[in-house]
Length: 144
Image (cartoon, rainbow, N blue to C red):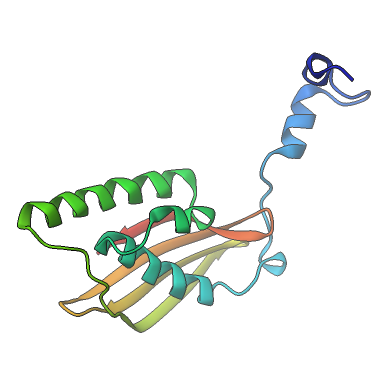
């Protein structure tokens, strides 16, 4: 088949819209998803390390939605500029997770708050995970 023919005609019996919806990301039920807690723990530490400047944000990209990724890039850029303005270098802090609370508001969605003790202060990270294509993706991140 010629490449131009691939995009020009829908498959017999299906509209172009039906084909696009079939290949679009699909919501996943909680029964199809792994346990969320290990991801929440690792993602929280990863986000804090990105903001500290010791981890590349690309390492977290597969677990973040596009909006969450862009927001984290912006926040990491601001943190890097603040470090440079003060003449500080990035250093790997140690974090200890104090508590993790999860609430599933609907099937395939988990909202959580992870409280983390760092070297200078204790912080809370709010994360919303949604199941897409059989895996969790963080659609919202808030660092308090």
